Length: 78
Image (cartoon, rainbow, N blue to C red; front, top):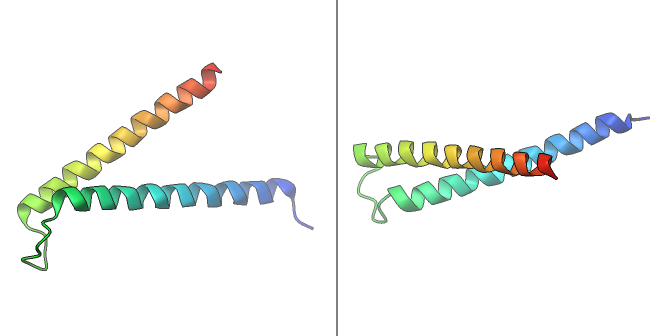
């Protein structure tokens, strides 16, 4: 005998986790394509690549937050 509210909460948590994993994977792919040289010269990131990755991920999360706020505000207006 399971509680329907518990099942619903678990389903929502799973959906949220899938969304976050998808978002993270998109961010990694976008920043990798933008910041990492296609010909690997070294096993470690150089200073320029490190800086680019930091800026890229920061901007990606900021943009995601802004879009989320706009969608939330739009949803409340309807």
